[in-house]
Image 1 (spheres, rainbow, N blue to C red):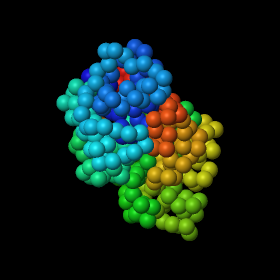
Image 2: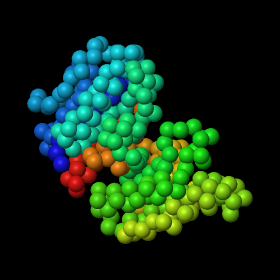
Image 3: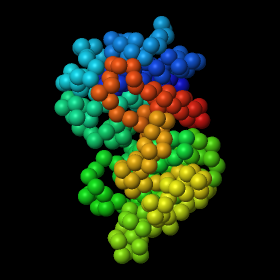
Image 4: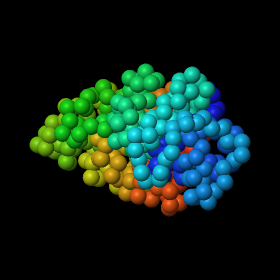
Length: 311
């Protein structure tokens, strides 16, 4: 596997240029392995805002997308962020880079530029032609995977399948062993409904869909569920589980962002490469001010390098 690490600039009018510049400035011995996909002007502006210096020999693949104003997204910035991402993914598909770190994009402006996917995860699954890609958030205190991702809540129950839940748990177990050094991972699987359905009094999905998935599992480690969602996160924080599997986006993300907001990293499981990203958005309201916190992007870069070394 290639040892190069691609970093996309994300939305050039958001805080992406700032957090990427800060992460590169603190990357130390990783710098020779980095390839940045994004235009020089917003990256240099981001470095100036964060009061950091970029390495003189930094590898940069430019799009040449035009002029970008912090906090002022438009069709040009929408097209640029998609171009950065597609170019980096193309390099990864060709085997030129082994890991991909993506700064935040604006789904609204990306869609206006022809981006036909709900988010990075779905795009990556399509470009790498994988059937199962899983969004997994790794923080210092919580690790949470999502069975369903960017769909309306009213569609969640209908989107859950026993096979999908089983595969998500298996991918989480594989990553915990390979990427995080846990030979016998302990995984908690959340129920969908309040009280995990209360024996079907509050919904049947926990018994009819989730429980059969757990009964079909077989790997070195342990698993438990369907768990009562409002208690499972406390147990994870107390050390009972190495990771949790949530049924839908906000069920998993609200606790992660409450507990590990600045330090959580979004990892895509199921790909032939390593992919990580910071766990925050474009933050147009502070773009260009130097107020952005780069901790999550720095962790995304260091975790990508760590995972790549294991592979």
